[in-house]
Image 1 (spheres, helix red, strand yellow):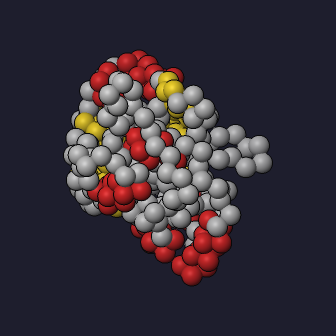
Image 2: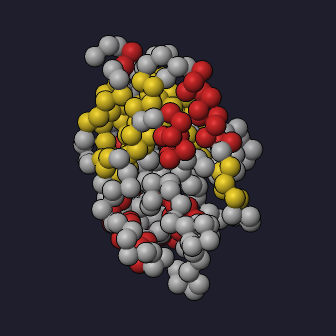
Length: 291
Ligand SMILES: [Fe+2]
């Protein structure tokens, strides 16, 4: 392994309408890359998608002459739709998500009463990532960390000294992800966060979102050491019991994300729309009084 492959280059592309950061991770210009947590723009008022955010990713990949090895999801997002199929069609690469996505698919197949042919074995993705699985991005070595809590299927991806933490932690002044979605659990999230924070202090951590408080500029990179010192929810010294109490109280005050219903239906299909009706149009469902 070359020394550069231990410290990959990371380019974050922030989507201001969903507060999501898509990452392109690569060793060098002209080499291989992974794309983490892409965004397909979706207007819930009109039901229309756009590709502005994904097109920014494509432009960067082309500018750096990168070959896409992987299009990775940290989990089935509830706040945005993934652009994985759009990116794969234009750039290539294999789509992947944590192997426990099958649990999430089974839950939401029931919630949305999906068509019998909808498979809950994860086959919509090219690959399912197991805990501690190793994968390659050219000369870069990747490692999967199973970090449930926000959802039962969340994973983080470590590539060299960089970890893409998904919805576990946010920046130190924002804290941690909510745990009140189906299969979420605050105690489990605490354990997952501690697993990430057991890495060396100078490990770079890249957030999936930023919700900047007090007019601070958007930021999405920090370190294990900084989180251990400063994260308002999980800094060193906060016990599991204290965290669970805080998280449970706080989650009870949070509204559902604007895009949760369309996002989940599309993301458990690896970004594909549901099968079209006989008029050639794909529809998303809204369960009334069921959630
Ligand atoms: Fe999420």
